[in-house]
Length: 589
Image (cartoon, rainbow, N blue to C red; front, side, top):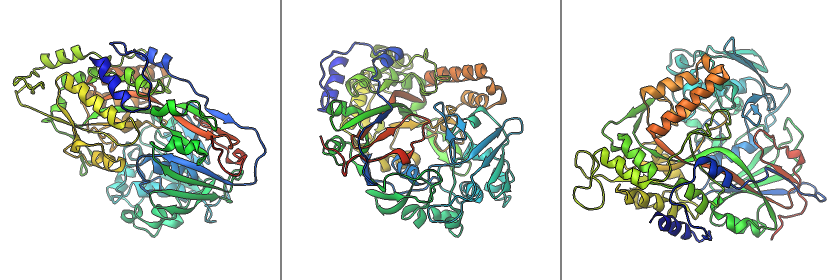
């Protein structure tokens, strides 16, 4: 029965030709990886370059830009793509996401003294011509740590800076751990020093913001201010020339850029819907764009662009909602009355779905069935032998029965152990041709083992609305499907810690607290001990299953044949001085 179910849902996308039957059980993690398609991560096209030109960049999204173009405040991945063009952050890293000095700033890590010294180059300027000083690196600490800051960046990493909590609580006007050495040097003193400090995004703030622009704006007013919404200032290869709200951003070359200047005159970045992106690319409307893996059959033989791919530090997942966020305490607050607190129910729902089959039938092997909450590009931390949940509806039914979930009224759905009917409300985002059929596949898979699940509001949600409701702990959401970007640090504290706003599931446990404390302890600097900690945590999480990791992603990028070269290799800094255009407009198929 499951064969026909998943094949019918996949077929309804009208993008896949289903010629192979599914095995009754899901492939294991290793087999799924072996079946995954492999792509090059860079391309070079030969030809005579034109002078300058405008590079057309499509941001694939089913929603508009949220329009929060500032590193301290954004929460939307589409906004982050805009920010990366004009204000990319100061920290460089290698292919293992380990901090190095390849970025704007030189980073000196002193483990013994629990401090990091950040040195920026002298005589550099913001794109508005004002000088850059170390005060612009210090400034974000005072914004993110401010009591009126309403963004999502404040958490354990910032609280680890000496004096930050006192500043945040209004007990001090200064952050004592920020030692301003001179106009170009800052030493940051930390309370604790863990291996995460060695990773990009793992504890060292990478933000630099123009203090001269924001200094007269109250923190509570910054997110909606003109420098965030209408005319942001940065130090990257391009500067913002104009913004069409929700739709497009036009960049021009930043002549104050600290490296070799961009070869193109400008970049036009526009939102393009996943349902039309392939047609737009084939028509020659864009030079560079993300590609929807669920439409691979429609572009695998494209003549006018190359497809690049890289295994991303991102995974898709299905999470359960355990409670709410307590603003006053700055931590999660679990609700013991929620039915999802029953571990047998969560495990049954994990066994009821066939992730490996989804990767093949919906995504043509471009995605990989997930075995862990740690992505496999962290090779020293993801346990390749950790088993994911194999598709086993009989086991799901047995787990439910053993835990007291029984269908007492013969309606096809189990009641809870107290004999009460229940319905789980499932939130999932719109966007792309597989969004609806995939959501329906999950719902009917759960219903087939007797769990009554319905879409929240009876329909998919627009992305911005979805995340707003998830972050605000909408009581009409019991389960949700999303993607998790884990950044450059494999340490899960920032996503699963009790005091982390990104812990959207609002889940925690005493055992999990111990694991997170271990992984951030001095003992974790020992590579062998650290690996065991991560392996043990993965095993624990797959047993507790507060969220079901479903797929690891390969991110695909289309590069038009008129672009001289493009490189998406992790740890590589794209040199815009080497990106040239070989024709006056993108080449059509």
